[in-house]
Every structure is written in C-alpha cells, then in structure tokens.
Picture (tube, one colour):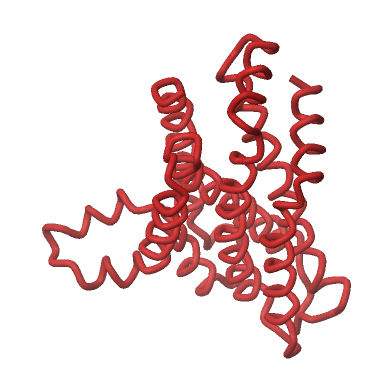
Length: 233
C-alpha cells in the first residue's frame, strides 16, 4: 500500500494536473488576504470553503490520471480494487491536508489578523478546513471518471452539487416547513459557517455537531464510492 501511495503521488505530480487547482487555491488565499487586518474565525471559515471547492477539483483530476490499462495492471498487482482506490483517496486527503496547513499558516506568518490565533481557535479552524476538504473529495469521487465516463457529466455534476451545497442555507430558509428536512440530503458544506461566524472563541459555546456531521457524511459518501466502483469497473 505504501508503495502504491508513493507511486500515485509521483505519477500525479508528473502529470501536472495538480497545477491549475493548486494555483487557483493560492491565488484565492492571497487575494482574500489582500486587505488587512482580518478577523480570525470568519477568515478561516471562508478559506475552508475555498478548500472544499479545490479539493473537489483535485479529486476529479487525481482519479483520472491513470489510463484504464495501467489501473487494471496496478489493481491486479496489489490484488484488491478497494486497496487501489483507498490508496488514491489517502493521497487526496494528504494533498488537501497540506493545502489546509498552507491556508492556516499563511495569514499567521504574514500577520494578517487583527487578533492572536489561540490554540482553540486554531484547532477548530484547522479541523474545519480538513473536514470540508474531506467532504469535497467525497462529493467529487461520486462524479469522477471512474463512475461517470462523460467528462461533461462529471464536471457538470460536481459543479451543480457544490453550488447547491453552498446555497443550502438559503434553500432551507425558502422551503416550507414540511420539506425543510430535505436539506439534510445536501452535502453540509456550509453547516459550520453560521456557528463559526457567531463564535466567540470559547469551545464550550461552539456546537461540534456540524463538524461531526460533515465527517460522517463524507465517510458515507466514500463508502458509497467504493461500492459503486465495483459495479462500474
């Protein structure tokens, strides 16, 4: 598994498919922090959404790197379809985690906040970045070329779901009361935004349920992805 992870990472780096999403991510971060000083919690909440979108893009590009014949040979070599795609997902999580660290430390290094980043605020903010990155990967995996052969359907499907997930709060407010629970089916990308925007930095005043729900939702989608892969391969 370790060798497969190494190979997958180096193969992705050689493909240069990582360059557009990573470049866009850093441009968004730099532009966002153009004006200083910035509020810590609100700023981190926004950059976590940037990572949600970019990690989805990374997932689509990463899962399409290996040609069909190459992937079949690798699956036969390791003897497990699940292990092959779990290694791919691990690589994506690792890349997204590195981007999360970059988004976290950049404003600290360049003193772009109007207050000190405490351990509690830093931990929760980093957790939000990682959780949304995982959600982005999970959502995009279901629309990857592994499952959808059409590039238009793949990209269009991810773009549509991301747009709907970002607008889920507005959708919730606009639905009649009997239908509001439908929103639970939408990826909870913005479920942590409202609690964070109203948070004063005291952990006891913050509901952890939105973070837990994002992780559970992501795991369920990834489990579904691994099940669907067996059907479509």
